[in-house]
Image (tube, rainbow, N blue to C red; front, side):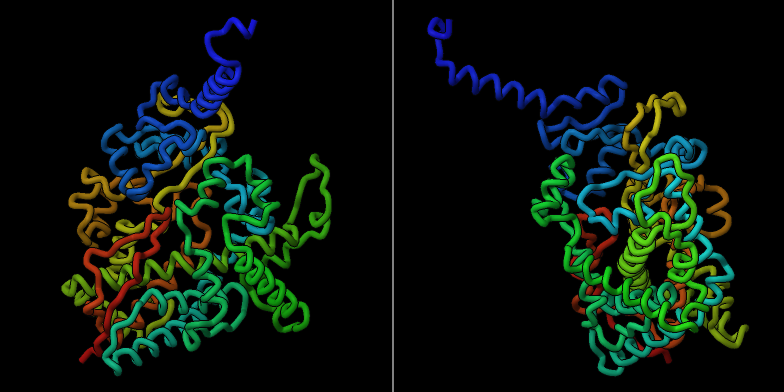
Amino acid sequence: MLELLPFSPTWLLVGLCAVLFYLFSTWSYSTFKDLGIPGPKPVPLVGNYLSYVKGVSTFDKACYKKFNKVWGIYEGRQPILLVGDLELVKDITVKEANTFTNRRTFEGQGELLSNGISNLEDADWKRVRSAISPTFSSGKLKQMAPVVEKCADNFVANLDENAKNDVQFNLKDLSGAYTMDVISGTAFGVDVDSLHNPDHPFVANAKKLFDFNLFNPVVIIFFLFPKMANIMEKLGYSLFSKPVTTFFSAAVDNAIDMRKSNEDETKRVDFLQLMLKAHNKELDGKVPKDMVKHGVSKKEIKGNAMLFWLVGYDTTANTISLTAYNLAVHQEVQDRVIDEVNTVSQKRGQLDYEAVNEMHYLDMCVSETLRMFPAAQRFDRVCKEDTEVKGLHIPAGTIVTIPAYAIHHDPELWPEPENFRPERFSKEEKEARDPYAYLPFGSGPRNCVGMRLALLELKFALAKALQKFRFVTSDKTVVPIRIKNTLGNQIEGGVWLKVEART
C-alpha cells in the first residue's frame, strides 16, 4: 500500500509529526475563546511570552486598555486570566478567597524555598501564616523599632560620608545594605553590619539572587515547560542560584544553632524565635495524609527564614531608593517632607517609632512611589473549583493574575499616572477612591505578611536622612528612572544621587 503513495513514507511520517507537534503546541489555545474572553493572539508553543520582550508592565498596560480590563494570555501552553476590573479583584481576592486561596507556584525553586509561605497551599498555608503573623503585630514592631533606628543611624552616617566628600553614589547599594541589616537584626538577631561592609557576603549573595532575567534560557524552560522541572533540577539547574540558596540555608542553620547554644537568645520575640517555638518534630518525617497538622516543620522554618531574609532585602531597598529619587527630582515635595520631619521630631523631642508613624506626608510620598513602582507588578491566585464571579465563568485550575502595575497606571483611576503626586494619598482622595485601585502589597488574606515592617524601615531611613540632608540629582541621575524587565521594581543601572547637608 505504501508503494502506491505519491510521496515517500518518510515524508508522511514527517508531516504527521509536524501536525501532532502543532496540535500539542496549540491544544490549550481555545480556552479563552470558548469562555468568550478576549486576548492577544498566541504563538504556537511559546504563547504570548515573546510579548514580554518590551516589558511585562508595557504589555499589561496595552492589554488592559485594549481588552477592557479582562483578558487571557498564554505562557507557553499555560492559560493565564488577567483581571483588572476592581469589582472582580475584590471578589476574587477577598469575597471568594476560599475558592482562590492559593498562589501560583513555580517549579525549580528548590526544596527549601518551596516550603516558603508564598508556595504553601490551603491548610498548610493557614497553619504557617498563623505562626508567622504575630511577628508583625504593632507590639512586636514597637519592640523592633530600636534595632531599625540603629540601622537607620548607620545609614545616615554613610550619607554623611558621601556629603562630606561631595560624591555621587548609587543609593540602591546603600539601601540594600540597610535593609539587609534591618531584616538580619529584627527577624534573626544577627548583626550583619553590611552598611560598614558593603561587600559583605550577605549582600553579595542577595544581589546575585535578584539578578533575574525573564529571557534566561533556564527561566524560559521553567516558565514555558514546567513538566521538565524535575529533569532540569536533576541536571543541576534551578530558578535561583544554588550557591546563593546554599549560603542562606547555612546562615539560617547558624542562627538556629546560636539560639540553641545561648539561653538569652531564646528570650527574643522575633520571627525566628516564633517559628522555633512553633516547631513540631512530628512534621519533620512522613506525615499521614489524614493527620491534622499543628505547628511547623524544620523545612518550613528554614524555607520561610530564607524567604524573609531574601525578600526583606530587595523590594524595600528599591522602594527607599525610588522614593529618594522622586524627592530629588521634586524638590518642592521634599521641602514639605523636611518641614514635617522638623515639626514632628521637635514636638516629640526625638525621632522614634511614634514620631515616624505621625509623618503623614512622608507616608503619602512612600505610597505614591509604590503606586508608580509596585514591588510586584502582578500577583495571582489559583481557582480551586469551577466558579462564576460577576458573570465571569472561571474553570477550576485557572491561574488568575491581577495586573497591579496596569491598575496603578490607569488614567481613569489616577489622572496623569506617570507624574509623582503624593496628594493622591490625602485622606480625602483615599476616601473617594476605590481601595482596590491601590495594590502594592497584594490584596485579601494572602497579601504580604511583612508589609508593616517594610513600611516602618522605609520611613525610618527616609525620615532620619531628611533630618540632616537633602537628596539632589547628579550627573549620573537618569530621568525618568528605568525599571528592569522583571516582575518587580528592580532598577536599571541603580539610583545615582548626591546628598547635601541641610543648613
